[in-house]
Image 1 (cartoon, rainbow, N blue to C red):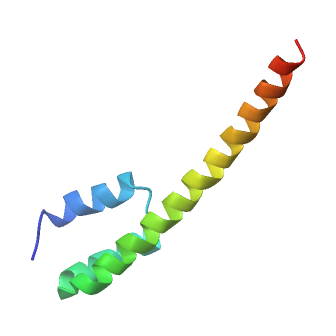
Image 2: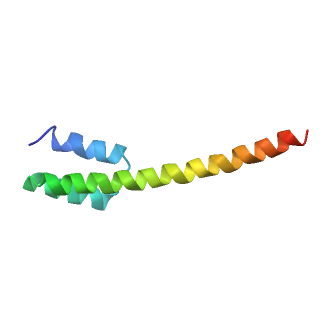
Image 3: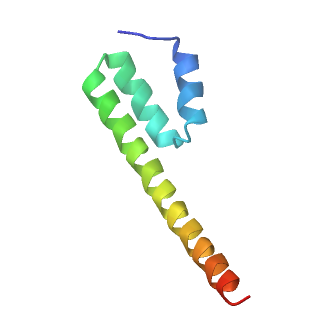
Length: 74
């Protein structure tokens, strides 16, 4: 089942930060009609993005802690 034009899907994958290998593999699976592997690729990339978000959240926590410490010593 095609939910959009291939070019639009590629643009969406690029906008989502997928690398070229992932995009190429996704398009291959799209052309073969292999939704299971399409979903697997999307889940893999989503997990990668989520790991990055958690890493950045941790960095924000460190900064917030420093701000807290500075404010405690005023």
